[in-house]
Length: 397
Ligand code: HMG
Image 1 (cartoon, rainbow, N blue to C red):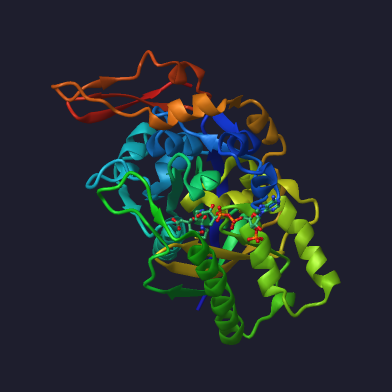
Image 2 (cartoon, rainbow, N blue to C red; image 1 turned 45 degrees about the vertical axis):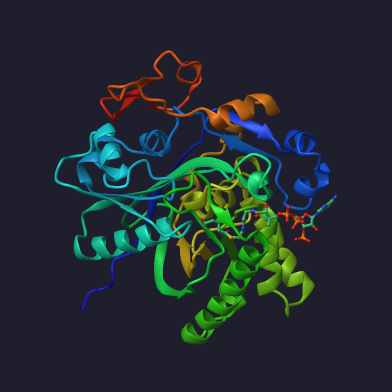
């Protein structure tokens, strides 16, 4: 029997909307002490999506940054993990496949289980490539987190999309086989079809997130005979960075402080982007990985990263990655400029953007093509209009 092929993340792209709200302005607008959000959640900004940057536009834009013509010829599957779907039937991956001009003999699907969807997509991609060694799979995690004006969840919103090219002999990180999942039928966060916003039992959700982590990690250590010393860093699903800190504290509860501090430094590198974007649901864990890899000088090829994915409802998974040789040269070192180039919204502008939506005429048309959000966007694709109930996207860059 030959050696098993290594499969994993070959490229990662990230797209976010052009706009953000400073979390301190939200605090003022809601009569809260700013420290509740800045220190209590470790959040500083939130990405805000205009109606023209939906999950298809953001997902296609994230992928466009990383794919070349050869990649588009080799992609045999496009999987989008999302819980902000634009249609109950048609998968967002089908629109994205077309926008990116990926070769036609591909399978395109959408996967849903709250924030866990993209991790399920990675599993599916890995299994497919094990059977089809020369294929690539495009995995996209794309979401817009909206809880509603003046709700407890409002400070944990965000918007953005991660795209990952999965293939053999990956240049960024190998996805290893060891993994443990856990499922619990709980109502911590859900969005019924009739509701624009999720219903959330906030404190219950954070308790479940942490309890799922500790019990799943215990099982992982037992089954694979591993312990904390087998890992060089951890990345967590980050609905808000403070929960990641609580996650670190809970798995290092019985460990020497010095040992924990080594991981804390890496943890801080992993939240640099999340602090400025907010929760992007399916993409949050992978944004935290991107942030760690691009902002930590203390990682090397062969290092093992523990990954905790959590989707409310709830399904979670603990798995791990091994960093590839020269992984740094396939990442960016200037991404913070993208954050600095966004436009800051006042609380009034944010509230107006929040309620902007598709209003159809009698024929099922709605046109955003003269909307300033399209002119201002830095992304490759935007959602331009609806014609006869069909969404139309436009390549602008
Ligand atoms: P809240 O109840 O308004 O806030 O909402 P709080 O009272 O818990 O305060 C937050 C923190 O700020 C606390 O820190 C306070 O002590 C602190 P902690 O004690 O927990 O460490 N604080 C202050 N600190 C400094 N100075 C001050 C100050 N005042 C207070 N002056 C909550 C917080 C997260 C519950 C809310 O925002 C919410 O419901 N968010 C949405 C749900 C969520 O994000 N859950 C996370 C776990 S579930 C998950 O991750 C899945 C998810 O991504 C969805 C999916 O899977 O699809 C959400």
